[in-house]
Image (cartoon, rainbow, N blue to C red; front, top):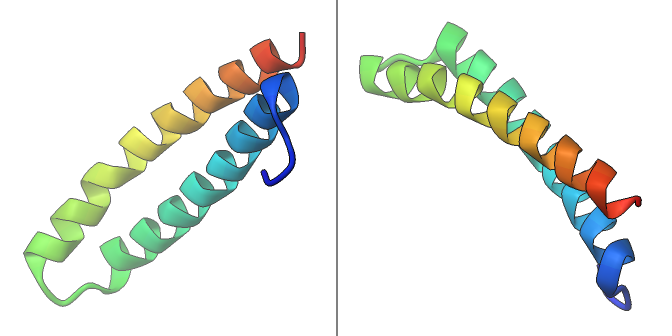
Length: 67
């Protein structure tokens, strides 16, 4: 993001955040399968839909920034 501004910054920010959220989904899905404590498993399970919604929102932002 360094050196970017305006629409280019917006696009790259959205793309980077999508990658970040995708990693969180993978981590959460693994925690759902492997966590020892119910609290950790429940937290991870609740994160997946929220992260997927954020990705959809970021994809819209990324598309808007491309215009």
